[in-house]
Length: 376
Ligand SMILES: *Cc1c(COP(=O)(O)O)cnc(C)c1O
Image 1 (cartoon, helix red, strand yellow):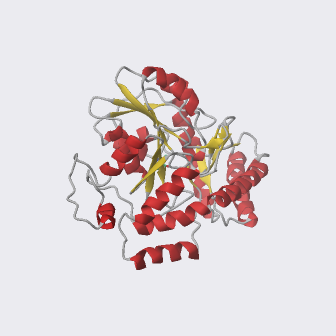
Image 2: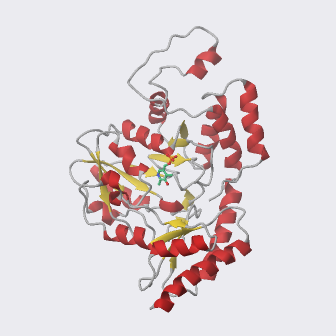
Image 3: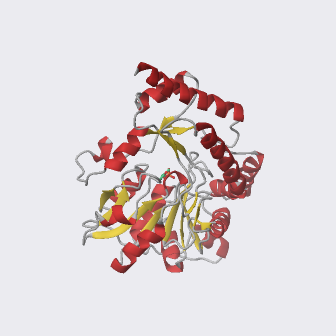
């Protein structure tokens, strides 16, 4: 991944600095408004990261000690950590082998009477089947929260991912399609949740510092509950507004490059690539490939060979339950997750990738796999 940042972002950041107001202020409010509109939500609450936005979502739902929250193990570890830091227990569920996402079946297998929420991830930008999960969870009054860290610009059932979500959390880390350096957002249609999330991210203050400043009159704020500092800065938000204007172009370019990868790799027997699911379109946040079942090379050896040939690939999506941080954490059998994490890798994909570079990646990958075949 390589962020797409231009002079416009530099200018916007400079304008925020010159304005003299660099903490959370008018530019954050503007970014919240335009981002929420773009993803089809009524309200946006900017945060310091997706991880803190997820933590806010869990707090809004009252998740805490004694509760269980279902999460995929197959995700960046922040998904599980956001639950862990509320005092609740992350309960790992397995995923669908085609999409890498939770399904109603994998979630149903781990529901208990202590399940307080389900945190579904649109992994690598591939939209999860949220309607299927809601059909399972709504009758049980178990809210479905969406980790949409990777999914800006993906679509589900013809609408942007995020439209109709109870709560969705987004990331603006440079690893994602849109970046503000660091940053996140919580989106929701519920005004009461948005208002409380805005308070929770700013120490529980009854009136924000920006509003007190704007109001002019003397206002003494109150601290209504013990809360956090999860604010975004106006410098970040200024960059975010410009980044958002690039989203459609970024997604279009990534989908073109992904289609070309798919075409070039179609001839490699048994190799599977990430694709659009039946119910939506992916932004190709990450272009993962799954090695053939009968591959004679280990994934890490493929990565090493690619690196030797100057190709910067990465391991596929991690499995949180296999990391030392969750050693000893009880979980059900997660066979699809373990296979997925062991056999997948992520190929380079960014806006300015050239077709020549793409050819180099494909040649290196076929050579790495072929080298294994020759050893057979
Ligand atoms: C990147 C990512 C996060 C964390 O985002 P930050 O903004 O770095 O906190 C959480 N969940 C998923 C699925 C991610 O890919």
